[in-house]
Length: 108
Image 1: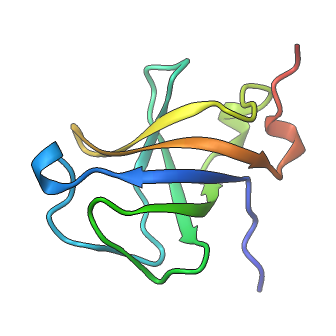
Image 2 (image 1 turned 45 degrees about the vertical axis):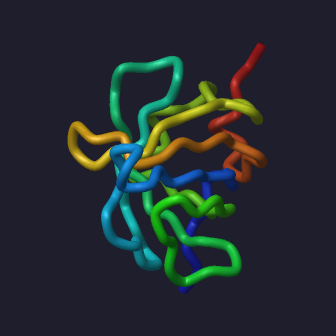
């Protein structure tokens, strides 16, 4: 079974001193994403490219699968920024590098 991928992103995790995670995140990590154009949060599954475990402070590329992609139809573009959130805590930042799900591409 293959997993649907919505986009590829570059993600930077905050260190514990920066208010990020104190422990590593493993494959299948599902933070909430908050995009720069919205106050809403969107659950997303991440699978990391070339890593199985990510430590605080790491910068990686991730395959991102949104739980409800229809809510972001026609709203995303390459370069769109977002935060990774665990509850009220921002544990990282990301930026879209490639959109795979064409339904998400922002129409000009």
